[in-house]
Length: 133
Image (tube, rainbow, N blue to C red; front, side, top):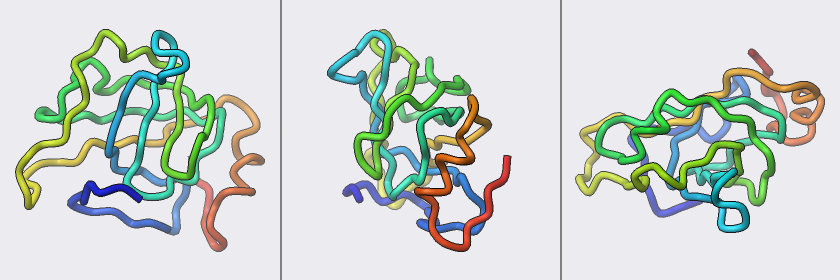
């Protein structure tokens, strides 16, 4: 969990994989020109090979990433993942300073997979979840 409080979030929705609110995006310190590190506000239940789209509203910076699609490469923690997108040349991702939020949250939206994603997901999803793509 992080300190950012989104306007909404459902930690364990019935339909998985779930859209998640983004708390931070930065170039991956180990490979900044070919990967980025994304932090979500709650456990994301994602797996390597999953394809996700980024919805970055105005006010969050990093508009170059808006509507881009990337593949998840690694899962360092339950609330972070790396993708194959290079964000090193984009404006930095920032959280709006106003609270309560009068904006749409930045989101990561699952849109597909590159292969054996559904098999990998069986080990990370909450019990009772349904996988839909």
